[in-house]
Length: 211
Image (tube, rainbow, N blue to C red; front, side, top):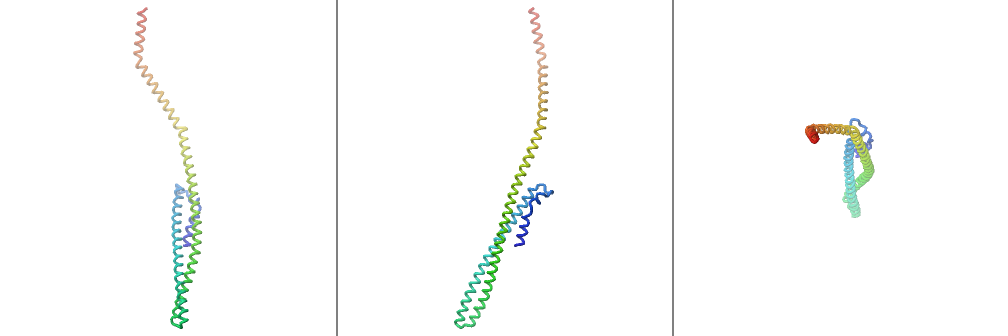
C-alpha cells in the first residue's frame, strides 16, 4: 500500500509546467484536464485502500478481544482446576490459555501497527487532497487566462477586419449607388426629353401666334 501511495503521490507532485510545455500537445489545457482526471481517479483508489485499512483495523480489534476473552476464560478455569487438584484439566486449560494469549498479543500488535499505518496514510491522503485542490485552482486560473487570451485575440481580429475591409466595402457600395443614381437620372432625362421639347415647342408657337 505504501508503494502504491508513493507512486500516486509522486505523480501528483509533478510540476504542472511539464504538462503545459509539451509542444506536441495542441491543447495544453486539455492535457492538463486529462491529467487531473487521472489524479482524481488515483485519489479515489487511495480512499478505498484507506477504507480497507479501517476494516482491517476493526478486524484486528475484534480478533484481539476474542482471543483475550478466551485466554482470560481459560486462565480462570486453569486456576479452578489447579485448586481442585485436577491436573489433566489444569494442563489442558493452561495450554489453551497460552495459545489464546499468544494470539491475543499478536492481534494486539497487528492492530497497533494497522493504527499507526492508518494515521500515516490519512496524513498523506490529506496532503494529496490539498495538492489536488491547489491544482484545480491553478487550472481555473489558467482557464481564466486562456479565456482572456482567446477573447482578446477574437476582439483584435474583429477590430482589424472592421478597421479595413468593411469600410472598403462601404466605399464600393457608395460608388455602386452613385452609378445607379446616375443611370436612373440619365434614363429619366432621356425618357422625358421628347415631351419636354414638345412642351417647349408648343409654348414658342403660342408666343408667336400671340405676337
